[in-house]
Amino acid sequence: MIQHLLIAVSDEGMDAQAVAAHAGELAAGVGASVTLFQAYTESTFDDWLDEMGYDSAPPEEMARRNSAVTDAADVLRELGVDRTVAAAVGDPATEIIDYVAENDVDHVFLGTRRRSRAGKAILGSVSQEVVLSVDVPCTVMSATR
Image (cartoon, rainbow, N blue to C red; front, side):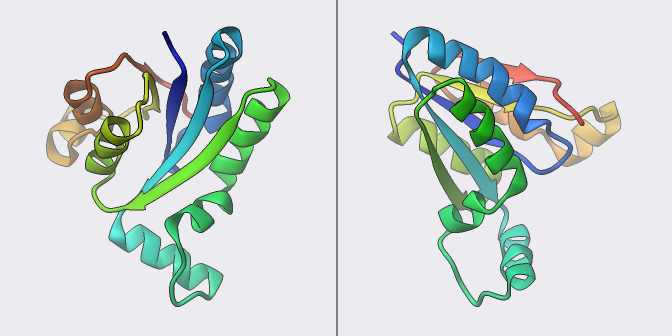
């Protein structure tokens, strides 16, 4: 039974609204809740703090101010889906995997961007690492802006 979905939100070319629409339709159909999860690298989080003029802030506060997260939340709200925002700072794949394991997530939605084969080999892939590491179904969408 699906009760809790996670959308891993990324700022890097992901159309969070498209991913939220698909995840939201599933959630609405089965009465599940959705967590919008933003995983920041240390450097990205520090950049966000500087942009906002903060010395420090909880990652969830920064995620709630993120336009990709708010856009996805708006889509879920329109579908009548219960939603929460969660965030963490660290290696994005590890943070997503840990959150899924610790929070009874039943299904993960990830957006991916198009990259060359060389780019995938050199940079790795958060989506690939998550899909290969979690014990729940994953939907990976090529949802680019």
